[in-house]
Image 1 (cartoon, rainbow, N blue to C red):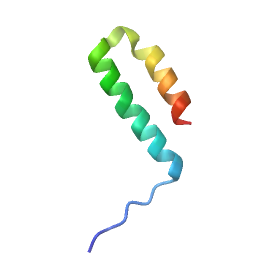
Image 2: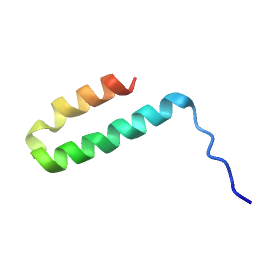
Image 3: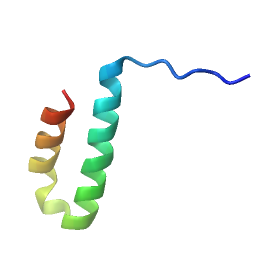
Length: 45
C-alpha cells in the first residue's frame, strides 16, 4: 500500500528553494551562498 505524502502546500516551495540553493551554490561557489539563500527563501515564501 502506498503511503501518501501529506505536507502543507507551502512546504514544497521551501524544499524546492533549498534544492535550487544547493545547486546554485555548488555551481557558483560558497561566496554567494548567503545572498542566494536569502533570495531563495523569499521566493519560497
